[in-house]
Image (tube, rainbow, N blue to C red; front, top):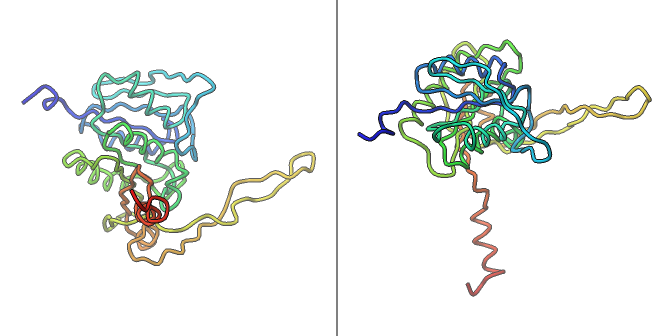
Length: 260
């Protein structure tokens, strides 16, 4: 057995709600003893950041807490900045797993494209690290994360044992409930946000706009993640970094590259 095989797994934890959020701290408790935990998370809320990076101003970080098997850092950057900085400058070796969350609020359907939680998850995947995003469909600061931790551990244990294919990361969403019956493997629902802004006025009577909206899910396929969540199940969607439409690529080649 070589040295790497004898080491406990190194688990990098991040989020987009900030290192003080209840979700990430409940996740830390649920993973205590599973491996060496390094938390590298924003110093405050960074929701909706997707894969945003900081390029025009410097980023800083500081050690907040250290004890046996755990280090907690806060960072002034985005969730993706946190992943990049931790891996490039702080960690002594490459993580065996990245877990992003637990997010306060769902990241199902098209929300995966806006989410800072999932942006950080995708970034871990870019580095070749098995990566999982965890979200609870409850925005409350004092939300109950017990079921999310329980189901999240099931997925985390699976990934630590089996790994993930190159270029694939996982998106787990959990509905609110005292006992969730299980996890359904799903595809991302084909839906979108509508009525996305509420118009108001500033002190000078000029219009300002607040982000709001309603989600419309037109996906009738029985395996979409929104339907699973609406029926009380957690949804698990394998996501890919490669966004190439291979079917259309093949079809368009007939026109643009007929002789190649």
